[in-house]
Length: 209
Image (cartoon, rainbow, N blue to C red; front, side, top):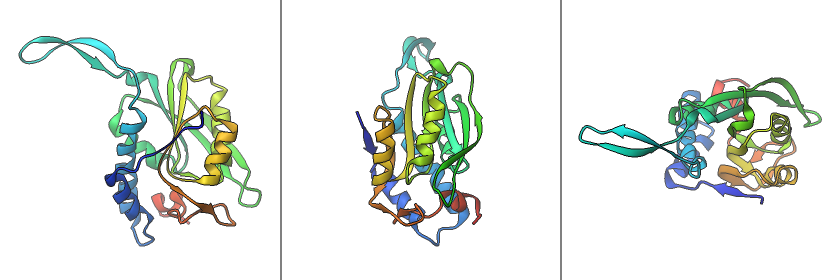
């Protein structure tokens, strides 16, 4: 299937430009990540099913439709994924949350897991995996490999910036999982960072180096 959805709405593009600027402050970067994530949430949930409910408006009863947020799980790839998670939860506050602690070894670029915690009954849940950067793809593939052991109902992957190499590697391993990105950049440098990218998302979110 190998779906890639680039969310190039003018508001998203505008905010991403400010996130890319090297002189954007930590606080501003964090706020922009939250705002972009809220906009991405609209697109990634566009095809989620609705269920009918009976309600009363101030004037009359009616049949309306609601999204069952309790069946949705956001899975954050720590630590940078939490920068997207906050915005997503603004849109779907009743969603459950899972965390995967995983980092890329700086010498081998191999993904190493250190934490894994998911809600119960994953078999009935639609999962949205969030991580700001899809760079080499190794960490994302490892995280989704581990997640699929819980047998979720469906999985989507959301990021701010993806590299073409990262997309290719991810879909070599998981062609059935759609990717949603605010931008796709051309290349990686020798350290596996996306060019032009926006730098290390975790460091910029939390003011570390």
